[in-house]
Image (cartoon, rainbow, N blue to C red; front, side, top):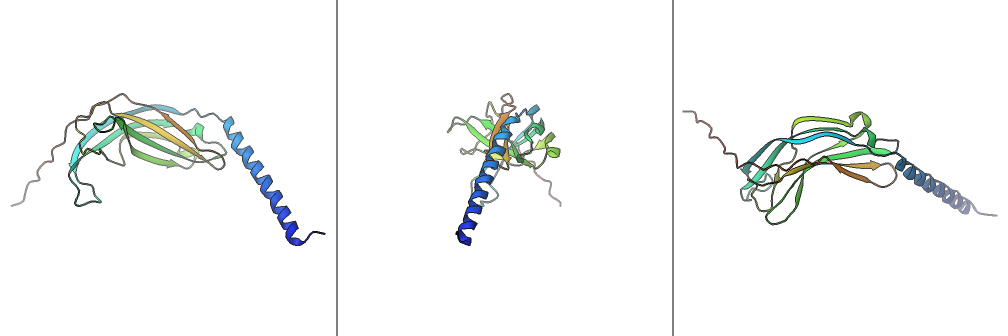
Length: 185
């Protein structure tokens, strides 16, 4: 007869085989739900270029930072099915550079944990992250575009990525001058 250890190994082997088979079926069944993301609008509403230093580095040089505001209307409810754990959504700005031809920086992101949070209506939303270039200059850049990306993170299976909503190219304005504060006498 078989010992207790051999019987335990057989039960565990059968269990893992069944678990992997069920996980494979779950991953394949999520392909039956097509993603139909509806992005009504994504556009830049306000762009400012300001000079400053990076907050974490006191000895760094003064650079130009772009602070963007944007409008976004998107419905991501079609990405949620019974295999969706969460959806990571983000907005990125793409701009040409003098040193590199294509530059992309994430300016805003969020995690959508459920279908009830999947409708995004943002008006004049300030970007979470200001962006700077490796050259330190931003003023006067042409052809800056915004795009909306998402990443579906399932319980089981592969990650699904998507992008939609490219805006028309916009030109960045000049550097905003800081106003002097009046001194109290």
